[in-house]
Amino acid sequence: HVDTFICPSIYVREKLIQGGFDPLKCIVVPSLADYFSGDPTPREIGSHRKGVLYVGRLSPEKVLQELLKAWKGIVTCEELTIIGEGPQRKYLEAYATAERIERVRFVGWKSHDEVLQAMRGARAIAIPSLFPEPFGMVALEALLQGCPIIVSHRGALPQFVNQSNGKVVDVLDTENFTKTLQEACDTASAPFDNRLILEAFDAQKAFQKIMA
Image (cartoon, rainbow, N blue to C red; front, side, top):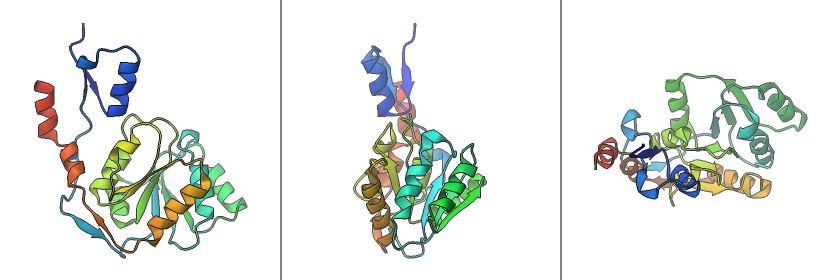
C-alpha cells in the first residue's frame, strides 16, 4: 500500500489521476530552487545578453531540426549556440550547412558551471522538445539565471512561463516559432522577475507539504 505519490509537476499529477490514481494521494513536489544559484532580485534583461541558447541532448525527441528551421528565418540576431551531445549532432550540423542556416554554433558538452554562465549571457533559451517532459530542469535553471525561456507546449514545460519570463510555442508552427525567436532577439531591455519561480520551488515549503 502506498500513502503518497510524489509528482515532479502538475502535468505528471494530472496524468496519474487520468490513469486512475487517487487524487488525494498525488502531491506535487518539484525539484527545489535551493539546489541552484538564483538571484531573487528583479532585473532588466539588458543589451549585454547576446544570442539564443539551446542546452540538452541532440536527439530526435528534442526536435532540434525544428529549431534550426525556425532560426533560418531570423533576420537580425547574434548566434544560436547549441550546447550538448547526442546521436543527431552530425546530422544536425550537416542539415544546417546544407540549408545555409547562418549564425549557428555547435559547441558540444560543457560543464554545469559553463552552462550556467552561458544562460546568464543569453537573450533567451529555446527548449523545443516534443517529448512530454515530466519536469524541465533546464527551464528552471535558466530562469534562476535570469534567462527567459521559449518552450514547447508539450508536457510540464509551460508551467514555468508567466507574463515576463518567456513564451510557450507550438514548435511545429515554424512561422510562429521564428516570430517568437525574433522577438526575443529584438528585445533590448525587458523586466524580469523570478521571485515567483523561487517561491514555487522553495525547499522549505516543499518539506512542509510532504509532512502535512
